[in-house]
Length: 296
Image (cartoon, rainbow, N blue to C red; front, side):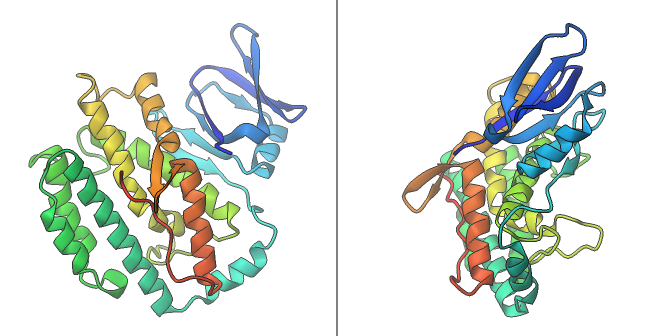
């Protein structure tokens, strides 16, 4: 079932009652509720939101990804459950025991899928994509020749113009990309935990300061879906760079977009779980390929 995404942008008191998330407006006293079983993603984006400890516990127990935003409305922290799968200890062992050749092969698949989706996005908008397909063919085990970075240099210039530079602190639409990627990262982390895997142990990313290395790995082929939403927004509104409620809603809705898995379409939010479940199967020796969506 597709889970709901809720963004809180007003001064609410959030609490738990009868398996419901209760949202009480701190200014008017009015309330509304959302069943926890229907909730998958909660974005808190207001400095005067108060959350009860009981609700935090129950949100974690229900596997809801909770993201907290900073004063610039950028996602800055996340609550994630430690207990997401009935056989997670077994899957932890399989994940940690995975050999380097297996992880290098899985990373090769990941880079190929990312470049394929980048090329498909460019083709949809009648931009040059041939160079990217050449980079995809050159990807080796572990992407030792860094075709991912070479493809990115061409991709960003084709998609957003020769003057665009992708940087977290760069000019718009970098702010929109940052927001969309943060939403995607949080949703991927939730899917990883639900599949009984450790988000800290990646197949490629290894920074000791990064608690979500695996999420950063697996979200790579999904990034072009965020890029597509940002590109669409840029060509819909003249003030696209403003991070207002409508813009954030547009980016949060990425999780509901349909993506293609070998002739079958699924909402992106559900597709993340297909990807993480297939990775668990790879670690267990039941399959050799990660299921990634194709840009359609």
